[in-house]
Image (cartoon, rainbow, N blue to C red; front, side):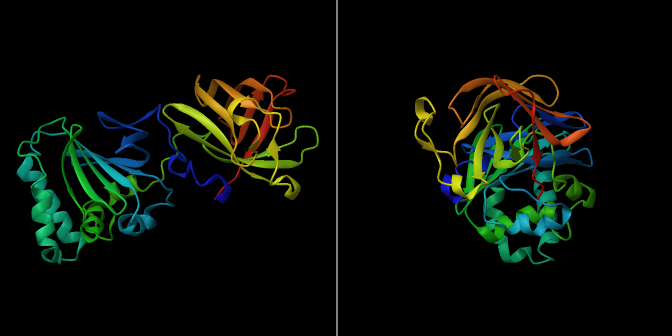
Length: 309
């Protein structure tokens, strides 16, 4: 894993070409925040006032990870969609103020300077259908956006922790909403880590990580399972892949959605002979832990098995 430099870690489980509906609004299953694509972990609504989505670049195991997420110094974001005209600027500040008091067990006064500064970033006019995005950049603080316009940044990790605990803490504003946000949304069944098998012998050969960049599916060889092949080089590969180390090689490229849970129109690189072929992958509804892979010269459909956490 270290050999490929974690170059794709921030893109694991991202799914850019679908949306999740919450009432009358939808959230992109991945979105770009300050040039980074983050995954929608979950979304829900609060009293018909607003809907909110939690975006992360790492996986969580469920509701019990709320404190972990809130306190983590890692890139993440919240998208708030205003559902009611009654959620004006003053009402929003009241909601946040109460949430911060709950999140700090009545000690929000210790963050009063940061709270007042943050509130200067809340627009004087908040209207129905407005979209507020609050991004946290590792070591750089919280930035507030309104309809794509940056309104200000507050660099204080303690405030960030308290802010996310409004929805994710031990005493959130809404328990059901917390569950919605931390539900580990699984939107795209082809994403994740898969064990690849030799179709003829049935022997496992490698582990491939599948991810998404800008609406296209890619797959990179994370590890060769045979010790003697850990340092293998693809001498037969063509173009930019020629003479590259096999571990870290992107062997699935630019597959696009084609029907439910199926992706095609991309290319597969055969590391045995360097051949690049048209490729399609899909997951059947009744076999969600099997990835079907077919490409020219594959001798039929290959079945990769999901590696679970």
